[in-house]
Image (cartoon, rainbow, N blue to C red):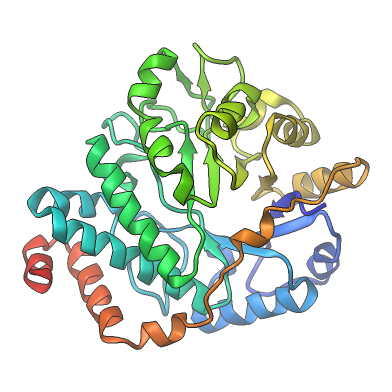
Length: 344
């Protein structure tokens, strides 16, 4: 049970969705822009969902920059690459800002009743991938690890679990796995020496990981999220004990695995704990019906990803939160000197 995360049609639950949420194989809901009007509406929607399923995971993509679903009533967050630029100017300022951005993002998300944002992005920016680009903290691996670690620390301070993506690295390929099946033809040794390093360094600090819909041709014929070899490596060599989320099974990068039930089966058999089916209600229902026909154990790792702290609203009224909002404003404007003036 609890193996499926799906999405919704609008700002409120439909009657069909209310019934859908009572089905125990639904373990999570992810919100998109069409579900979001403002902070009060999101809080009401979250409360409505929890009145039906208190145990469910409520998620959103609130990375900052190009990927920020929650807008009205929320701080506009910078692209993570701005933290990398700041770190280049002053390491300590970059780390302080990264920690505060993580804490601010998480506090605002938790404050409206959601559990987690699928963050941070641990991909390296090679300037090849438009879909990653400035979502990455840096091109330099050591800088990226330091900044991501600080951002994760901030998330944890607000009581939010951290989900690293896209294992073992999406930044080297030009293709967008939303619309194609990208191929990364590097050797395993090359991947281990580059893209895999942030995941190795931070696995013990992550509660969730999302694999990429990319085929690493020297390692396996299947995309990482459907690859027993990659997910076994994640568990056994990186000693990752948290929850593995598939990326969206409705993406083109997942199409190699076949029909939607076949995609879900392949992801779960490879080692994913929960599968996402988004922007395709018929496909989500198809997967749900298939799950109910199977003997699949409950996902025991879900509880660890629930938001832990009830004090986010208190922190949001603090002087430190005010500083975080000021920093976010200057980072969005790419005014790094003003950020330095506030932090040094």
